[in-house]
Structures are given as C-alpha cells and as structure tokens.
Length: 77
Image (cartoon, rainbow, N blue to C red):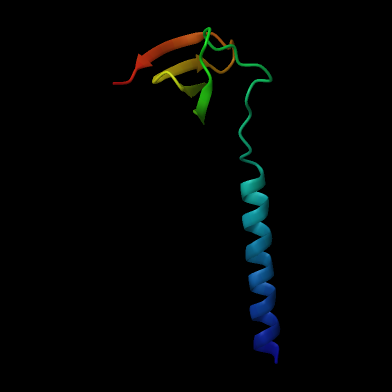
C-alpha cells in the first residue's frame, strides 16, 4: 500500500515538473508580419532571434525578431 502511494506521488510530481518546464517555452511572434505584395504565409518557424515565413510563391523569408525587418529571402525551385 505504501509503495503504491509513493509511486502515484512520483508520477504526479513528474507530471507537474514536465508541465512547469514546458510552459516556460512558449514562442512569441510579432503582432503583425508584413509580407511582400501577393505573398501568403504557408508556414512559420521561430529561431532565437529570427523567424522565417514560407510563402505560397515558393520563398522563405527570414525576418529579424526584434526589428521585424527582412534579413534574407531564399527562392525555392
């Protein structure tokens, strides 16, 4: 009986630690992303100080996270 209680407590503590650890890693995106004319976003990926937007016209646009300025544009074939 004691072993069961200890095992249940351990599972609950492990679950709580996982939730606390993962809740701190919520990515932040800017409120507004300005894309070139005619481009629509298909996917977004976030780095430490940048974010990338894959557009429907086969481009990857890499923006600076703090300024929001376009850093690089990569055309896909």
